[in-house]
Image (cartoon, rainbow, N blue to C red):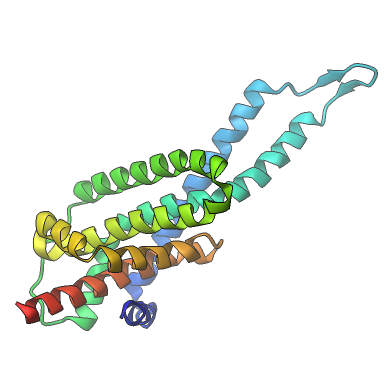
Length: 234
């Protein structure tokens, strides 16, 4: 059933509102990554001299350049990890647009809901980004001591966080935060699996720019499927 939700989301990728969120998410994500890289280079320039004198060799001027290229390679590697919190948090800021587009096409009979205010969305996004970064930094300790489990820890952790946040946002639009929290807890397995399926391709460069939008749409379908089943059984 989760795959059915995902394929419905893929079928709507041509929607102009999806493309708008994609372009905004990609643009802001790239700007943030460039800013982080520029800050990293600035720190290198503060602590590394332009010219280093090596005994028996003399002055060497290419050390800073070498470290600069090394930092670029490091940032390319780190971007795999950074893109999950950055791209996902940025896209969560625009999740309301994606969810509304999904509902307009697939659930047109639903009453309109009030849009999440920009400041509420920004607050949720900043909180989500902080949790993602903090937990992933803490997870590096586990990666060091349990390297053979690092992939499982990475995808399991981010799958849990992504599933929790995206389902909560999608459900809160319709039933409020408290009911959304209870529904998520009652369907933890489905939400976690969907989050893990979302986290896997987020580690692939370029593809990870599209996945947050597909994830937002998929979790909107997931919520309506669970909510519909709950209403039928009730």
